Length: 202
Image (tube, rainbow, N blue to C red; front, side, top):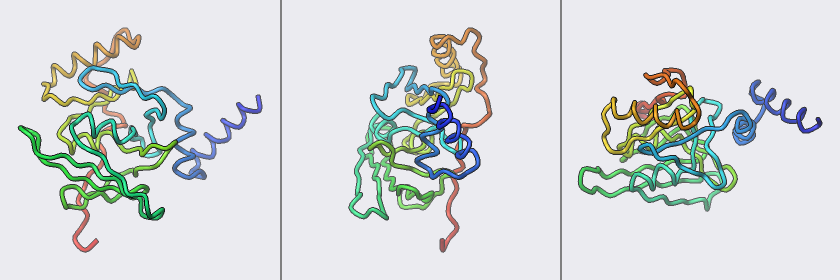
């Protein structure tokens, strides 16, 4: 019973904005399981699970979207106040070169030398760097869709048509016990993050 009240208070304080980012994320983790698929195949996370943050973005360990889409991940955490994560991919075939630099707790991101803004921030949680799956995946050339009924984020990396994507989403939703999954995908958030250029001089 004491544990129940502790969790209840944590969620209440988070909803009122009194908890820091990491604590808020931990509280949100208690709410509901999320699922992640790449081209219809479920991704399993052995330790830190994906979750929806306070900005209603699906957050995943950075290595998931990066390595799945052919990129390498590097870190520079030598300065506790300026922890940087590097996501890099060389051009190969139809895949363009990508160079992403983001900082823990900072909305500003450098993408191929240009500054962009996310409407959420990367955080460190349980020894993992958590990033918004859509932001990273789309800059690496994939498409991301959210299916609200099954609480599943889908990453499509092979240029599937909308019809092919719908079929995969329906099949995976049925495998999760959703008898009549609805397509099109719910427009409700989590949805496309606001990605905008920073004004010159900022």
